[in-house]
Length: 128
Image (cartoon, rainbow, N blue to C red):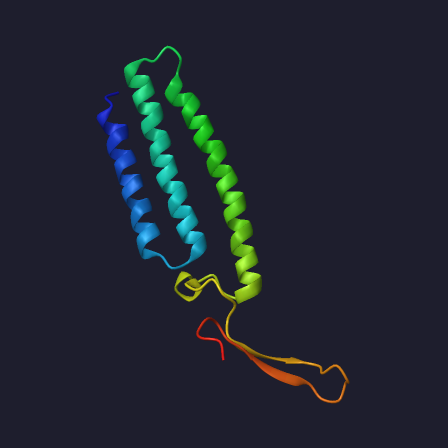
């Protein structure tokens, strides 16, 4: 088989992955798109390793390292997504642009127990 066929398939996979990263707003779909891009790189590594008839099979060894890194990336990425969902109740990327906590009113009981003290939690800005 000629090297052009896997290279074209890898280019298509990589293009779909780039489109998914740029166009999607769901964090899980963005992670899946990154995986598509990594798989396109893996396909290129193996195809060129076979085409060049490398005696050490460096492309295939590097592919195994990429697969291990991709597995770790998925584990850490999903852990981050779960932590963000617990704090923000959404995984929509447009709503996660700020790193600070969302603005809300919090009622905390006063030290003497009479009535709760209401404070407004703000994000950024000038201190008053």
